[in-house]
Image 1 (cartoon, rainbow, N blue to C red):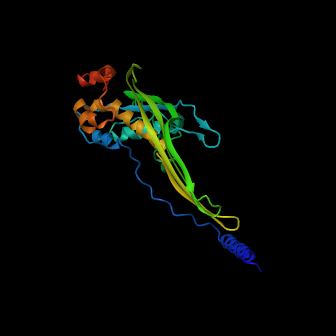
Image 2: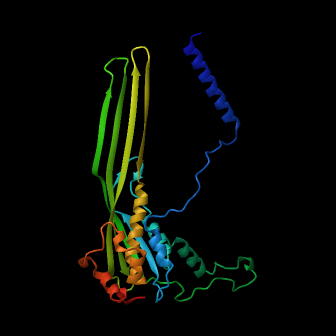
Image 3: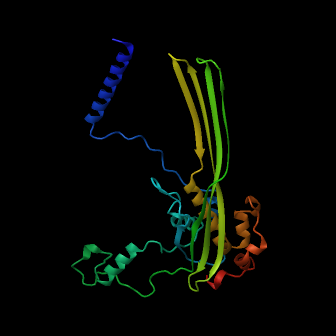
Length: 306
């Protein structure tokens, strides 16, 4: 028997035994999962810094509305390229900053329970059902907490290739059985942008707005070697690549925007201590862009609501 046929039979036997072993098990053993970890961004520490302070006046209750994806970028196989959960990112960011948050994004459970309460079907002591005629949850005027402000906005830009660079090189022996090699290295940059606004819940006045963009970088490196001639040949290739997670970039934008919209409620001094202007790549904002923020710097509350 030729050596090649021996190797083919050995490979087939191994695959057959592996299949029988798996078929004999009721469940396949999954690969061990990586542990769940916290999911901070570069601005999480600044938000927590705000929460650790003691404001002079009670903080306003803030709600989060829809922060939608307006880029329109959708792929056929994977769907939307941008996370559809930016509103959830904003709610988490407000919690990190220590603000009281009221739910406005998903009220389905609240509406169902309110409807049950209207029909006297909802009880906080279900074990007393049938024994107490007054065993039902009552509805009182003003029992739902209102918001003083709410945050809405959207993801407005996704520019897939604003810069790229690379090198591609090949070299080696001219002989047919010599060694030849190839090198391919690339770098590329894309960016994503977001616009957020803070709205007074009572007057519907837009009291502040921000716009931020973040670049997302990626790189790849590939190396290949070939050797051999007509009868014998060998190929060796390898490489590595990495790209900053695009959805994590969206979370970073949300946390930066929420910080800018809410930090003035704690006072301008604390805002600069938690995130100094010199720590920002673009530096402090120009005076003409500080319309609503200038009110807070002068001690005037936004929209007159606390």
